[in-house]
Length: 214
Image 1 (cartoon, rainbow, N blue to C red):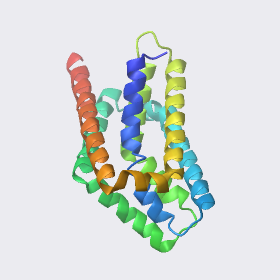
Image 2 (tube, rainbow, N blue to C red; image 1 turned 30 degrees about the vertical axis):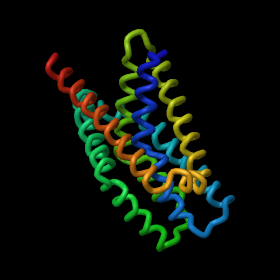
Image 3 (spheres, rainbow, N blue to C red; image 1 turned 90 degrees about the vertical axis):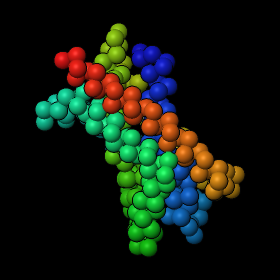
Image 4 (cartoon, rainbow, N blue to C red; image 1 turned 180 degrees about the horizontal axis):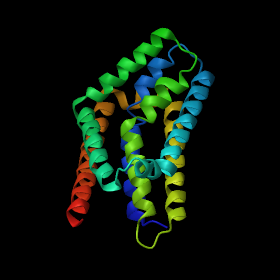
């Protein structure tokens, strides 16, 4: 099995990129006027779809990269840059604005497939989360002393727990929104953004060092 440190780092990275707390006000806006039962159904369906998308990339991501001639080290640098951009947007509030634009579009249309767009894509399983999933899956499967299947089983477990937690947060969105308030959510998002920035720099550095060794 992968080390405890790897598991913790993977969970933190995915928690920050999925950002369940940051999605609370957007989820409430999208489901305004709906009953608690309907909101619960949308949250569960959206998280289930997002989990399926992320599991697909966790299990086939490196194979897709190999088929088009992209090394994992190159993707590690590109993914690190993408995660850094996500972190920058979280710190300065641009990510929330972009998410709100997508949410407002659907809210006005009152689309029946709300759980698919924008909840599953791009709010929960966006480009940053997909990139992080591929990188984490690759690292866990290539960790010394860890079999490929043990690495895959670990990332599957982490993603499943992450989406169960996210579903719980969205189901309890109304209570959390009142408890945290706008200031609390703002501070938490900024702190998570700084943490993601540090993790993304580490991905970039690891990729560059791997290239240098070759």
